[in-house]
Amino acid sequence: MAAEYQTFEHDVLVIGAGGAGLRAAIEASTAGVSVGLVCKSLLGKAHTVMAEGGMAAAMANVDDRDNWKVHFSDTMRGGQYVNNWRMAELHAKEAPDRVRELEAWGAVFDRTKDGRILQRNFGGHKYPRLAHVGDRTGLEMIRTLQDHGIHQGIEVYMEVTVIALLKDGDRVVGAFAYEREHGRFRIFKAKAVILATGGIGRAYKITSNSWEGTGDGHSLAFDAGAELLDMEFIQFHPTGMVYPPSVRGILVTEGVRGEGGILKNSEGRRFMFDDIPANYKDQTSDTPEEGWRYVTGDKNARRPPELLTRDHVARCIVREVKAGRGTPNGGVYLDIAWIKEKISNAPEHIKKKLPSMYHQFKQLADLDITTEPMEVGPTTHYIMGGIRVDADTQASTVAGLFAAGECAAGINGANRLGGNSLSDLLVFGKRAGEYAAKFAQENDFGQINSEQIEQTVKWALEPFEKQTGENPFEIQHELQEMMQDLVGIVRTEDEMQRALIGVRELRKRSKNVKATGNIDFNPSWHTALDLHNLLNVSEAITLAAIERKESRGGQFRDDYPAKDAEFGKVNFTIKKDAGGEMKIERVTILEMPAELKQIIEEMG
Image 1 (cartoon, rainbow, N blue to C red):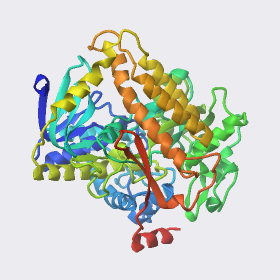
Image 2: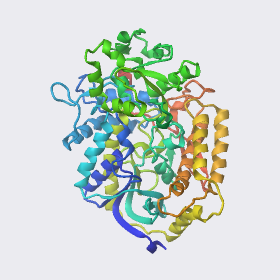
Image 3: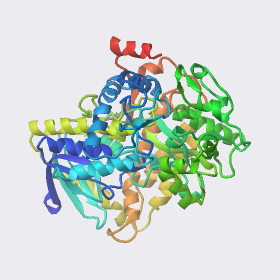
Image 4: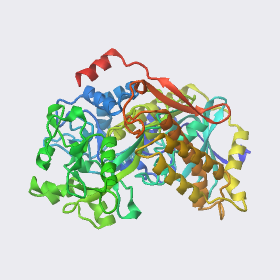
């Protein structure tokens, strides 16, 4: 049966064409192997373009006290020390070189007066560390990587969705996919496969993620027998648009707060001063001027409380809204216009520093951010959890399968610092490409299993064979509502147990979904296939969140509001058991080497 489908062969197949996928493809191609790059949407439309604020790298261009040790310490503290410390170490050490490499390939960064790459403040970072291009950093990264990648001879397959990884025994040897336009199936044979598919935001009702973020890589890896890690940790970005309803969830970059934006409730009060962690209370004041000089442990590293970690800011916003101090549309106010008190040409300054935000609010909400405050609220933004990988090689727990970027886990622990995602894509995209190419050079093509292909085709076409059945859009909508309400920013055992029952019920119903029309240009069929991935990640998130009976980073439990030292020593993994069900296991975090422990102690 395999002979019926168009087949493509590559030494390395990269699934996903965002920052991690492109960087992996470039690195693998540089090693001299044949590379295929599959993307679900059009090339250039990756979710990486939505990362606006910058890429974190300790280049010390603005503050010469910054170095990899401070960055490592900040990342571990932000992740509440359940991170993979080796990944955090590699990232902090290698990020500056990856940014300079991007610059050499043509990326145009904002500059300091003496011509170096400019860096800005961001939540959780001790010093100004984010190399940026206004508020369009992700877009510039994608443009640069694409331009550079074109010359590497990488074969790109656009608007193609992978629905299964192909295995020869215990090894991944390719992927089975369909092209979205006409629904034709395709076989990709490969010696090594890299997953770089991004996040899971579409499992939730309010998200900054575009339609592609349906947890494809997480689900493909799980189905292939790989382990998932840290799935309970979801980052709800504090600031997404809340109005108009048609754009609810679209990201409002942390760069607005990095440039001086302050958060106020409906009473006009700057509420972030109400809940400052004890170790940050060196100097506080309610006035914007004093807030701008707010101290975080280092008397010279001054920053506003709006730049505390994202989980903390998101919970503070939810508290204000629930207390009835929210805006008319259920958010709070984010005000950058106030800087006119400090800067004479404030409107021009804002337009220069935040051009995308200015146009976004002008076009979508008819609001001028240089004169009026924005309405913002939390939006499902990023998953810290993902495919469990080896820190150095990005190899998953299944032979021949690698992962990088948001769909891989480890570096961020319980919470990701803003800006770490873009440099993570570069650092670990490069490593995934390098080691996948090495694996491909040391192994032959495996055997494609015709029976696996037949079963996958039968499953994929089932929605067309039903005379009556469920509407896939309705099931997706019910899942998103349920995850938003029951496994959202604030969680409890009772609600999550209800969600677990609900997800499993929706999984049964999903087996009866019906696709109308034919296989060409068919969104209902695409949604029916995406449902499998969304249900997988939703169940994994809920299971892990129930098991972690504490609050830490992106997991906040109302019934266990404190951190528990015992849970600080473990991660939770999820994989398939012999019967195909999800099995959750507690794994002990490897002890950190003495020299890294010393760095953290020195950095306070």
